[in-house]
Length: 212
Image (cartoon, rainbow, N blue to C red; front, top):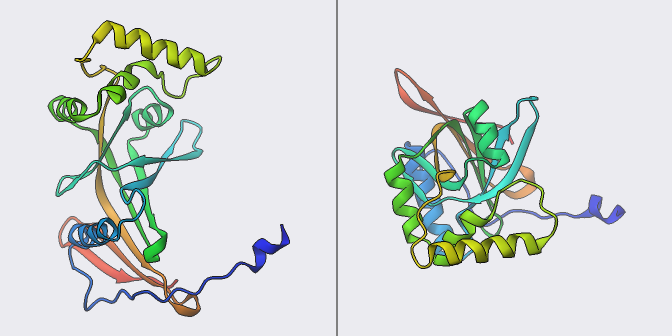
């Protein structure tokens, strides 16, 4: 695998400077997310979610953001999964979006809370039927003997609920309340642009440039 050390890419698509970046990180994020959607990137709403376990060790996985507004960043999952258990113990997380084609990364950090039951209910009802059955069938992060177990559970819950499965009590949304943002734009010669925003109780959002 010696060729890995030789892999190189020079970034030249865009730049990120203080004069054009929005002073509000949410608006800046919405701008970049909209550009990723309009560029027809594969799953522009995919993000890496990092949590910390009881042993202090981090873990990551990819989830899909389903809502973005002034309250925070929302995704949905099984509350009894590994990430759910870790968030129960340590309700803080970090998110990362990597839009490779646009040579951009966004990092977000903050406290995490569960969404209201009504909000989770509304989103669950909007999902395809197979996905709603799947939320019942999958005991996420638990060992299973083989795929047949999962298929059998899906068939069983499908027969039980028919076309109207309710939201499982162990399934719902999380909302990250941003306390810090970082926007990274690749530039030539590894002299990348990095703008970091932090929430100050007195001054609101403050912004500074970081060395790459």
